[in-house]
Length: 123
Length: 108
Image 1 (tube, rainbow over the protein chains, first blue to last red):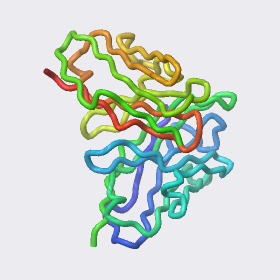
Image 2 (cartoon, each protein chain N blue to C red):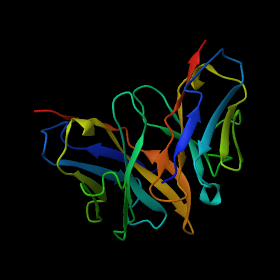
Image 3 (spheres, chains in turn brown, red):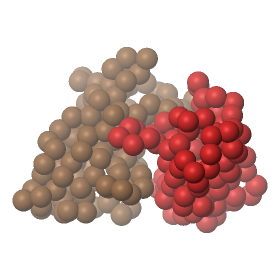
């Protein structure tokens, strides 16, 4: 059974770069059946899609964050990562990684989620 | 970008009652790629419905989804105590993916 686990610093200083990793277990990140996704949720607010990546490295980003976001895959470690540069207090949120199931290229929603990790931006 | 507007913001109901949640899209969603998620406090969201009306694995049949043009509905036929939570709709028909602002179903 596929499982995801986020890891990374819980506190980041303003203007620095937030870096998170999602470790995939119970399956392979090189599966053609999944897009790998980052989502965040500021305190008391709604979910926000950050971006998605396929195992081949193809990426899609939220235009509101595109200039600051990089999502990458490390097949050797069965992980994918998020980097968000020049952070401000507005980037304080719970960050989730998730897996979107696809079959013959058709998407079926994000059916596996990590537990989430809280990142606070503060000096 | 497709904007999703959920209503109402909060729904106050009693266990056993029927819940009807709405999600309106600002434009047509490709291939009915609309999902519903349930989120309880301190937990990650859980996929309930995909493709506007298909239940995800293990989801009870009291949850159902429907669509009419750009209007989507999540119905919980009889609320169980564990159903009180926040529900989000999400479109995945085109990038950027977007979520609605959520509907909280609370105990009356």
